[in-house]
Image (cartoon, rainbow, N blue to C red):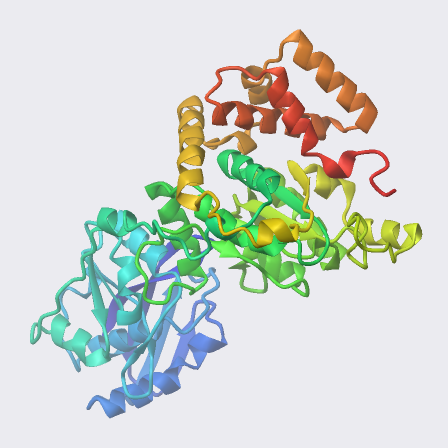
Length: 511
């Protein structure tokens, strides 16, 4: 008897429906075809044990299973449940007339219980697109899949629940989630708040500008000046995610299997990889490509602490994703693209000893050592960072001051107002939502300068020997400063402030 059951494969952040054809015939043997990987080939042992422990049997006949399309590589253990139900129906042990109306996915334990899978959200989106009635999956993944409206999503704990439902002997209640209610659960009292930061007013201003325009920022200062503390507080002043951004972010974390029984993600991600990270772990890849840290930080913040300690080749692979806001991973037979529109926040010491520009500490590094240390970060990478700011240690008077600083909630109101101006400005454009995403054409249109501003910028360009890309960065940052002031045009004061935030471009910075 031939039976067709439906599963799904995830490539990048999109799913492809897989038809599992099970044929049972005279003879003996178990043949699995259609480019399955080792995890799928090993499923026969898990299936046999799970069936026996639930009162069923593996048919002692010739079982041929084809996973179509047969030229597409299938990987992972999530097809266990699909194959098991196909074998039971094909061998006549259960009767399921509506089996072709459901997508079935799940990894089996030997007792018939189900283990979580990856990519439940993209699979559910595809199932709805293709008109399936429902989706069976492990209970641990049900919240992320239930985000998709118009599809019955059934979270199951063991194989018997699916069998009883398909045979009409039992009922399963589909899980429903009010996506908008989930989405609007906001945290007005963030764990890390700017009100805890003493002094550092100029740095807070920089952070506010970076958050308002989505600009990349690098903090340069000695150990203990507060670089990491400030970076950790940046997500607390970013505007709330839109529903579209929340769905995109949830999809990526679903594919990576990082959604620990969570529905829709409504907080911007903050990723802080260690400096020993490999380039594959940072940008994504592997023999079965998975999203890397830059994609996990999509719509959020990627924090690289002690930037010069990262391997140079690791930093260089970030250059293209920083510019294009997506990363494409190519293999011999397929190519996947992951979105990676993140805010880069980097921190670094100004010298190997860390105390180069601290007036109270002796300079212990020679100019040659410092040059070698700073040369680990290439010019093209620094060019892609809009704001460079020096962080100096906070004096004791400020540290011991009991007065509370401005809270993250108050700063976020100004940031959100500036972002709303940008949203309105770019509403007709598909891939541009805030100032940092502008290309040269938009900069010419929205950052037109008067004669005074042009002369000021010309002088700065000549004195600091800035590149064309740095020129664009200054204009983008100036446009954001104007938006924070609710000013319709960029004026010389905005340009002057933006020029200040290019510390690493200044001649003589090395001494």
